[in-house]
Image (cartoon, rainbow, N blue to C red):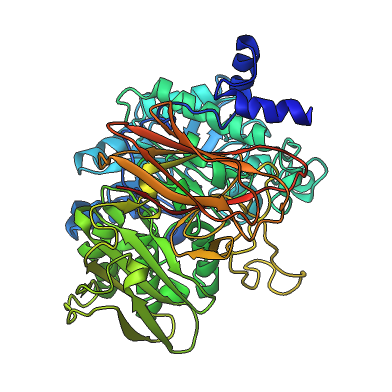
Length: 638
Ligand code: GLA
């Protein structure tokens, strides 16, 4: 068994297996070159979605006045022109599912325009108004039978009403019917699909017993990825994606997966939705913001145009991010911008102070987020105190954020190397908060950051690689088709704050979001410095063996180069791997088999006019089940 698997890996190069055997192996083999970009091409969300959502402002106490007030303010304040166009109604809009025909009914008491005379309740007048204002409309549902509010907002005046069946407002069993209604008939453009219905309504649970819901054996256990049915969760979301394609007359839809970083969604979300939550809910507490930020900030290689990591909606305006805490509010915004997070305002915009409008309305920072390249910022310096995050912008520019996570003042030295700029040419920074242009410097420059402050700059300099580009500078052009992770493991690199619901009553927040061991830009999959046989690399791709990356050659580059090998941090020190480079499905070059301790091997290939380069690490043997950590050091297109 072990042997035949190893043969199959070599099989795609056509060496050992007979044709039918190859075909069978290929069907199963995630590292077989595809010869193309395999992610669905998406017209929507080419840049991270921007807009407003009712949840952080109103929870379930949403109503039409509040939503239309926000919509008007988006338009009147100029925010809509900057890109804030989605107006999303979150949980709380529904009345019941009518059991005669299962059609969803809107709570017209809070959405009066939905009470269409002589007809079924309809959101069409509401979406028509938003569309007439140049905005887009978003709605909310759940992948199960019941929603989150039905478990967590029990005092809400806006919970679904009626019998057990009438209160089953989620998509389970009604995917086609509901999606056809929401998109075909009502004209929505965006849907967020939550996951409480397959998580918190366990047979025998207090919520099911005391509030009379039909139980669902949980498919998600947020505390245990091992007890989560990843394929089932994934296929349920896949079914929604298919229904959206089918029932959307104008083809204009955004699909937001809200499974809170569970079920390994941080790895597969890109294949199914336009955005996927990478964590549990944000709260207006600084350390909770750190938590949700960290859940997305290490995942740059998994985001790209049409597919974004979602660390949750903005909480600017509330708690630690209110108008009295503008340093924190600005940090929250700059961080979301530079990691290509969706920018969804969560504040009652009808009475928003100018100081907050100025944050959301900072056109330069919005432009960082909305840059068409879609390259999520990559962590160039990392610590629990300070981080430096660098994002490639179009036109040879970069954005860089210097982020002080803590409560002490911090000295930060920004170097040319962080920016992958030459150390002997001037570097120019423009402060995107106060718009000052700093005196050009060479090599490095020091800054002092106030507690919790984030400075964010646009940076220009001479690229260290000249006309070439490091792969870690272009995560938006890379699809992690296979990351080599066979056993999903919780990611321990996420800030653990005091529990937002339980305080210190339990034993503390444990790592729960799978994805540990996933592909990383400029770090190993387990957050070490890239290093092969003692040679360190400040740039490259860290990835497990049995992996395949697809790289779009958008810059029409002609050569691929890297220094490759098994990373010094690997725990599997026995097995050997081979590095292979394909251009449009054709093998261009491959390394000799290499193992732990072997020096970095140069690997280079002319990629000519190839549209998609694939770089693959194949295991040559399997004497141990431990993953082999490998490094594409200095990997670049030239
Ligand atoms: C979950 C989601 C939130 C929000 C609420 C609504 O907690 O993660 O973003 O939609 O449900 O009940």
